[in-house]
Length: 129
Image (cartoon, rainbow, N blue to C red):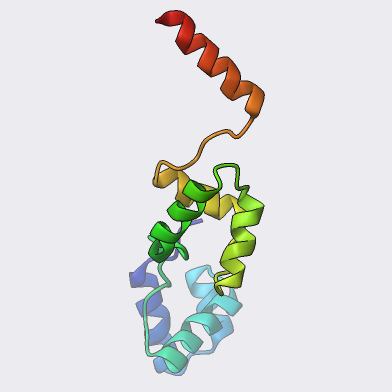
């Protein structure tokens, strides 16, 4: 659901400034009374007339630990996501396995650790040579 337009927010705030009741404003602009209160409270508490940003870029919690994680994987190639999450928790970084997997995938460090699958891949590449 998209946010209401800035024009509508401004008209609601102008009506509040004129002393109109929130119930009457909500009826006139076809919005909920609670939304009128929400817009007013956002202006009073934070001084902002705009909606909150929806979505956007979030920094990874482990971005600064890339070299550390790479060294863990070099030392122990069969390290699981759960074990890495545990080690990161020891460093004071709380992260769940799916979020860690996404970061590892960005770094090109994600791969299947299934021994039988890796053997099949090795045989297949040896047969093609």
